[in-house]
Image (cartoon, rainbow, N blue to C red; front, side, top):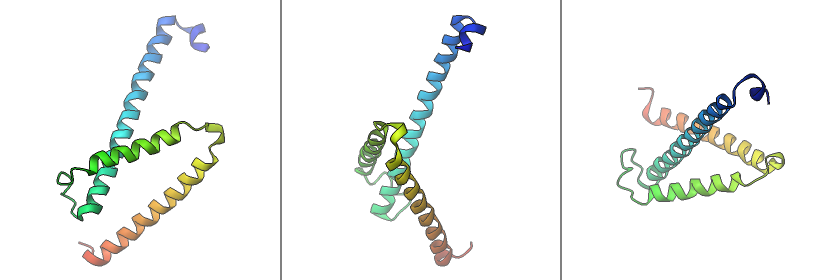
Amino acid sequence: MIAERIAFPWVKNTIMGILVVYMYGAMCLKYVSGAESLYQGIAFIATGNLGAYDNVSWAYPVSIIIFAALCIAFSFGDIENSKNLQIFSAYTRIIVLALMYFGTVYYLGVDGVN
């Protein structure tokens, strides 16, 4: 490695340690924010109220289980043979984009442009 040629071993180990801590934090933040978004979506679907997240006690554990199952299922795959994951991601992005447009148009029609 180039790092071994131009720096002392402790520099390489320090940089690797910083990267490990950074990546761990980034993954934790990704999973927590993803589960929180799913939790809010499930609670909104169950109640129809944006402020009723805490009143739906089962929504957060269910969202954690669903999000963890999806993350684990896609984590064990081989990256080189990820055709199914890419197809699933492409369709999911298209569906989410279409739902966002539909929701925007719907709420503009119902509430107006306030």
